[in-house]
Length: 218
Length: 218
Image (tube, rainbow over all chains, first blue to last red; front, side):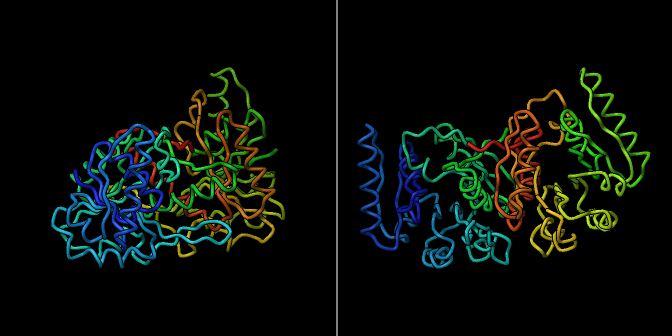
């Protein structure tokens, strides 16, 4: 499968790229081609140091989307809509778009600050072409642990989406990362309950002197 | 410590009453005295069957609050404000009020539906006397597992509140239940992120054929 990771130069993008590259072709997307290429090279070097290889390339966001079956939106909330608009002409019917985006603010502690639609995912749905299958996932996974390729990830990944087939494909992508377990959380409408886990986990780490927390359902 | 559990006739109240009764005096509160007494007797009988004893009594909500150091609001969101209003004359400066309340709706799946204040806790804060210390907790613990006195609870309990001392007392109450671990999630303002875990966990159980899920941070 060809997976484009828009914002793939950030830490959660880094972890997904390196881990998925063991089974899939990864295209790092960025606003600047050089930055994407640099990140792709860096990830390949890290993999080599761990005696692994992976197919990771880099290009501008639009070119990444053109080649991909699955597109991951792994960028700051503030830049999400403009990024979606910039790649919209290349998003086709059946494209799966995974949103990891979280609208949050920091004022001593972190707070979930969704737009009027209720969540980032519900806002994105309004601007996406109808045939694109939007799935919300990976909000409750530690970016730091994900990007440490030798770290075991005994964590659950919560998935929201309105298309059962797309949810299943994203579930399979979660299973592709050893020790992660996918759990369906419901339709896209409940994405707020999943997105808000990111600031919650950061607060829990901060107030309890923990680091890089994830969730296991028991 | 004397702990009043308003709505202590429901399942999460049942679990807290039986488990805390091993270390504290528990007063079950209800709108009807007889119902509260019946529940208290039932819990004592269950404890006896497990070769345990506990000091659990029952009375109307107002009388329960009058005797208590800590008051637990363990009732449906729809009845929360009216219950608070009914016991308000007996809530004194320094009283700790623990809210387990979750505003949620079910329409196939469960959805967190907070009031305009952002969360049940933030709404309650507006109507409570100023000296009452409100703490939001226990939303992410399975009521069923909690009420099964022989069940091991390897779960985390997230706590939100604006008063550090009150948060610490509630943390200690969590530690009083073997295997539960308290984690501070921040001030009361982030209670929405904790309250919404209840519908999230119910959905996760429903969509993934699991039962009575709780959370462990890893």
